[in-house]
Image: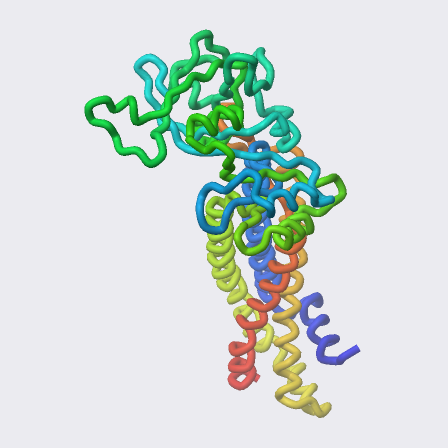
Length: 408
């Protein structure tokens, strides 16, 4: 065993001549441990919210979405798309036609996003808890088309999950100027009936703005015959989404962009990553302040161990070796605080996951979840551990060298 490490370990755990030094040393360990625990818990809460948002979006977003790199619509029979259909990794291929329209119900008028899909939509998404109402998922009948509204949109229009009278829907005709003498002639008009259900993704982006209907209806309304705005793909079980994405990109070429669910909501997750990074930076500064407590502990220890230092010098130890002893002492305090803090942080996260100790508010059901969600990420633990060690080393390196010259 390296004698410098042996001496540093003895200094950390042995009793000092002044009891206050022991107390300050363990206060230093506790300070680092608490800051480390705060890092673990805070980053885990951010992970929990990210997983929660991802889970909400995946109820509506496809596993893979294909769009044009430049432009908005493309031919449904594009040769590249025909190749895409034949990929072995593709389980379900769904054409999507999407655009804005105006819905009018009585005195209510709302601009909505119409998404036309076919019956394979049910295989594209996790729909177990997506639809609410006494009806069933149906997009078209023999003589009419059906529209499934987001629950918040239905509330805006004063509608229930099931409504008897059809809703009127308008979209501007492509390539036509508004006729001021007869403005309505410049719009495509149609009607949608209720299948007796609404959908709820628990995200206002969808619940307050979207209507699901058939591709045929969307094409008529939006003047998009023979066209699609996007292709939605579901990959076969056992196939990695990222592998399927790479295969699709190879088949489609540079004209198209293939996005997974996280990339489809890139703006949301980018903001969440920034917030997590800022929280990490602020808590690292708090950790740095906690590590400065180690300096006080080491300075008192140096004063207390002057006789031992003189003995080491008589035995042939150099000033650099003696300084290294106290440097190791500071690093061991950081290491002990890191290990204890990570263990405590993981334990608190487990308690929160199992029992939901810290709630979102007093009113039950007011939020999507009742308690703060947490998710411990192994990579985060590694980053936190390395951060504590690096910050601890930086916090004591220069002060210990300076104190060694002036106190020993």
